[in-house]
Length: 278
Image (cartoon, rainbow, N blue to C red; front, side, top):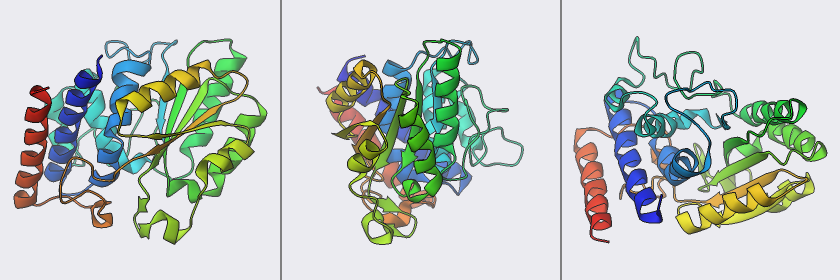
């Protein structure tokens, strides 16, 4: 896909994120919106996946380690055709398969149940190791939050991945610098993130995580890197695309009311119209 096509797709995914969270009257829009461009590139350009065969053995694997941003993953999977988009409005509703956190047993395209912060990277490392042991060509991707990497288990997993030279693993850190309690650098600073991953044997790349040129170049570099895993530190804007949510910590984990929803959808409608003029 061209960058313009990816931008249009990401804008549709952002609409679905806001719609799902509004319908649920709960959820995590901020980090879902900041990572929407990463989700889009992974599922529409980077990963070898098949919506008609979600469990095919040679597929690339994805683990949403920051599982609370499930609305972003669900919106992307629906846009890609894994399940109907109209199901997104059942998010968090009683009886819906779209729970507040990803469930691999219920949701087509979800490779791992997640939500307990810090644990997803360990699973992704295990998947990557299994691929090496079985001499398979699939790649494994894990998306972590920058607040999440304050968890110690992240670094245990990183240590082992670096030691085992898992060059089929790419870790993406959604570095929007906001977590539930405030600014990441004020709660418990993980900086410099790239140097920390390098110390654990990773090739580290720092990019603008909302720029498709930089996203594309980073994933290409990760594929070309041999003998070590890659960490992509993606600097993003939390709540991107919705004027009143951008860089606002209060939108980490709450849903817009009807009036706010209307404003948000108008913002995204205008963004889509602007993209159509390009």
